[in-house]
Every structure is written in C-alpha cells, then in structure tokens.
Image 1 (tube, rainbow, N blue to C red):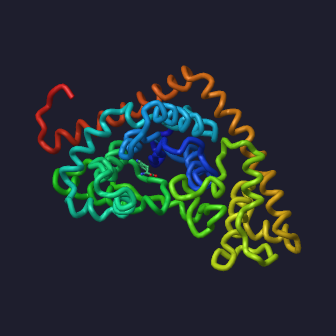
Image 2: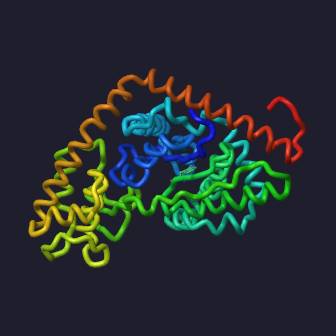
Image 3: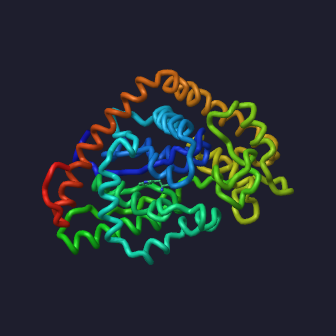
Length: 337
Ligand code: TRP
C-alpha cells in the first residue's frame, strides 16, 4: 500500500442487519472506490452502537454481518485496512483526551444528539449518546486521516473533529492532521420508496420503504413495483415535483453507472411500470452475487474473524503511535500504556 496516498477513514454502525440500497449507493460504494486511490481505513463502529440499547448476541451477529457485507461489496483486506472499532482500545483512550478538550455547550449543539435524545426522552438518553461525536473525533484523529467520506448528516461531527484537532495542535503543538470532510452529496442520496421526502433509513423508514440487499429478490421487486410515484406519466428527473420517480432514476443510474439523463431518454414515452420492472431486475441481478458472497463469509466465521484480527493489528500499529504522542503532549507521565 503506497504511503504517499492521502489517508481516508470512515465507519459504519453494525446496527442495521442487512445493508439497504441507500447505505450501499450512498456510502459503501465510494469506500470501495477509494481503496484504489487512498490509504484507506474502514471500520465497523461497534462502540458507537452501544450508545443505544443492544442485545448482546445480536450486536455480535450484526458486527460480523456488517464486516461480511463490506467484504462482499468489494472491500479488499489487501487494499484497505478493515477492522472493528472495539479491537483497537486506543479509540476510547484518545476519546477521553478529546472529551476533556470539548466544551459542554459545544457538545450540546450536536444536532444528531439533539434529534436522537429528543426522540428517546431524557431518561433513556445515555451519557454515551452525548459523547458519541467525541468518540468519532478520536476515530478520525487516531489515524491522521486526511479525508472522511460521510453523508451530509455527519458534517457537523467532522467539523467538530477539525475544531478539536486545531485546538489540540495550538495548545500542545502540532500533533493531529486536520481532516477534510468528503461529503458524499453529489453521489446518490436515496429516499424512502414509500415516502420519497425522507432519506431511506433503518430508523425512519417502514420496511416497505427500504430495499434490503440481503432480502429475497422477489420481495425487493415487489417493493420497487409498489414504490410511491406521482399521478403523472412522464419519466423525468425532477426531485421537487416528482420525488418518487426521481428516486427510482437515481437508483437506476447509480447501479448501472449511467447518467440519469440517459436513463430518462431510454424511458421516454414508456410508463412507470416499465421503469419499475427493469429496475427490479437490475437490483436483483446486482444483489444476487452480493448475497452469495456475504453468506460465504458468514458460513466461515473463523476466516472472517481472522481477517478482522489482521485488520485490527494493522490499524493498531498506527493508533498506538498517535496515542503515545498525544499522551506525551498533554503531559501524561510515560509508563506502560
Ligand atoms: N457516526 C457515523 C455514522 O453514523 C459512523 C462513524 C463513527 C464514523 N466513527 C466514524 C464515520 C468515523 C466516519 C468516521 O454514520
């Protein structure tokens, strides 16, 4: 792996079970592409998942499942460093230093925290949910990442990372790379099939609004065919007036690597039904090998675990270095860390 490449780091929570098409087209696909051009670190953020209640057996299963799906989409352990966050203890260690550098008010302004905590109520909101963004800061800074590919919803967390990196550097001397957000915005933003005003997401969508990649293809086809569209007939990309059709065009264009304008042209004069039928076929063809590969990893947990152990070892080599520098800078007495 060439070390002169810019470093990229991102993480995905193991809370969703099957990835849905929005995860894939919106994020994971870019991860796969970036392993060719970057020194890439990708992780399954199991510690972040603990900020909401998790069933232990399910968390373990979902962590393996997330890793298996990342591998199945084309992440290659020879080309990137793929690991599980909790396997690298330096994340929580650096997180403490970052917590001590963060203002209470600053953390209170994180909009994702405000959304999640208001949905749950104060009684069920943990301190971990509050400090979640600071753990994310540590995730990023530990690897001296130059770029962080995330969705628009994570922009504020990357901004916080930049602020804390700069604060640390100016207080203690240059230690951390200040990362750039690499907002995956021009790339596909996929909406709920039943309610194209909201993003396709496990927490907000109904099952009918989501295409799960591990679903039976017949079920996915049915969901696509019953996707909500407007009462018109024209197949045109117009997110304002035709959010449903525009969403299907985005999925179609991204999965087939074609410009939306070309897809529009292809369906000129044809009805919504034709577009939906073809899209169902395209999704099913894409998902079949993905499902098989995911299952192969799940059927062989020893191989999967050993890939993850190797990934953690590679990640840790970097993390240990950064943490030692940071500990030293703030004045912790050298010892056996
Ligand atoms: N908070 C991110 C999300 O929900 C996941 C995440 C955790 C992450 N640590 C990260 C993303 C570090 C990028 C970099 O999508």
